[in-house]
Structures are given as C-alpha cells and as structure tokens.
Amino acid sequence: MVTNLRTHYPILLFLGAVLLLGDCDRGASLRDPDHERERRLKPAIAFVEKTIETKGRLPNRNEFTRWEESQSGWIYTLWDRTDEYAARKGATNANDYMVGVWRADWFHYYRSWDGRYLDASDEYPWP
Image 1 (spheres, rainbow, N blue to C red):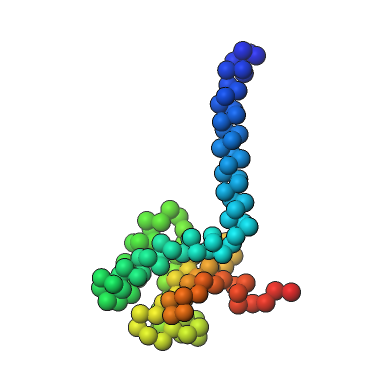
Image 2 (tube, rainbow, N blue to C red):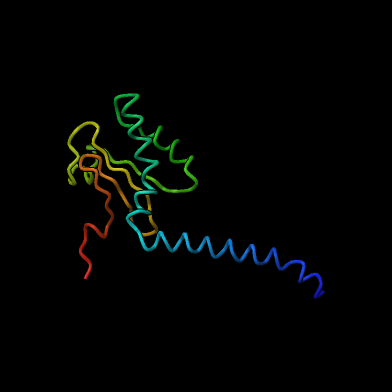
C-alpha cells in the first residue's frame, strides 16, 4: 500500500498545483472585478457589433438567443431603446443597446452609447 501511494505522489502534486493555479486565477478576478465584468461582456458586445456591421441593425430576439445558447451557460440579455430601462438610461438611437450578463444577484452590463461598463453597485451607493 505504501509503495502504491509513493507512485501516486507525482499525480497528487500535479493535481495540487492545478488546483492552486486555478484558485490563483479566481483570486485575480476577485481582485479586479472591472476586468472580469468586461471579460464576460466582450463576446456579447462583439456579437451585437458584428450584427450591426453586417445587417445594419441590432440582432433580433431569436438571433441573440441562439448566440446566447452557444455561450457555455452564461445568461445574457439585450435591451434596446424600446426597453423602458434602457431608454431611461439614455438609449435613443436605433442601434443604441445595453447588453448584460447575469452575476448571481444582478446584471453586469455595457451601454453602447457611452461605452460604459456598469452594474448595480454603480447605480446604487452602498454605505
């Protein structure tokens, strides 16, 4: 039994290193939430911008849903100027949009008309 355990040391060390490195990466995203927010939103922004570039309009609900389903389980949303919330935040032109990604308790989102990345903590002052 001891001999078998010794032969597994390299495997155990490797797995420990993988877990440690994985945790270090997670820690980096916790230390830099703005970077994480932008990283999660960039694919959605790229999809919407490409649709505007190629079709001259925002993606419709079916196009956006098909794209979202290809994104490894992340929940995204797209609001345009007809959405009350987006209109209240400043969306006025046909290609103005807000795209959001769900983060367990609120959306991180991006506003196309001013290029800002926001979330609930940007809107509501916390004590």
